Amino acid sequence: MTNKKDDMAPNAEQVLRFLAANPDFLEQVAAKGLKNGALNGKIIDLTPVIARRARNEARRIGLQNRSILSLASENMVNWQRLHHAALALLAAGNINQLFNVIATEFPPIFDLDSCHLISASTQFQHKTSEDGPIFCPDDILTALTGGKSIVLGTPKSPLCALLGMAPASVAIIALPDRLADPVAETLLVLCGQVKSSFTPDLSTDLLVLLAELVGVALTARLEKSEEVDIH
Image (cartoon, rainbow, N blue to C red; front, side, top):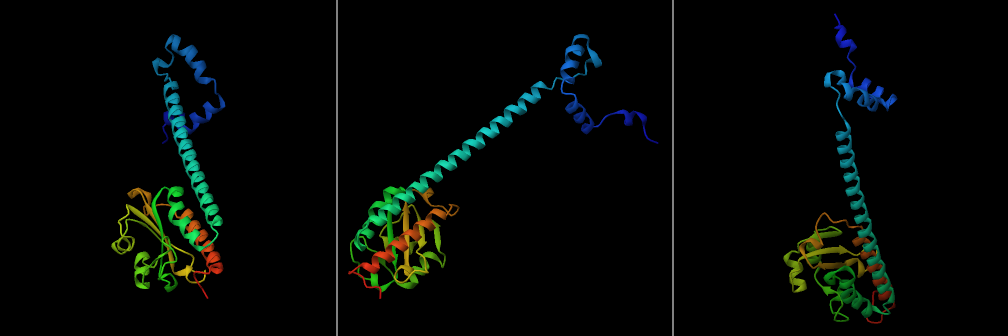
């Protein structure tokens, strides 16, 4: 048999529905009940709880907004860097100037320790300039990337041997393989100043776009260059 007392006790949903329909109820009870001890002193002042939850929610939203703004600001800086790099590549009048842009202008633009091109193309076996690509055999080039289009993190010994140094961290990005040789056999290597400069969890969108810009610019300059014959 159903307990009559249970049927008369409202559940939480009913209480919330009643309070929503009667927003002034608690204030009215507090004004009258607290004065003469209504409900045997069982009236509960919810104001501190509500205020505390409101403060916590405001704090959470504030932190979230700051995080979003920080991320947006960081993205804006990265796009500005990519824009500056693109302008520098466009300004290069010949292949040697292009190599110089990558070697000397990319590091300050992207806060790098150094920046290099590494290629397995025999056309780069004898550098056209001091800043030209570092030549390496096909098997070493494959070992540098492990067959991947991009590698981030701590440099391995074959790369350190080629560079003659041990960078704190590196980003190794293959130039687009749909471009003609020797570009398709070339890697762009960004050497970070610290270990956290390039980590495996880093977003790669900017790096892929940078490699595409370098690949297209290199292809265009090689086609006009008298120093390197790609045909």
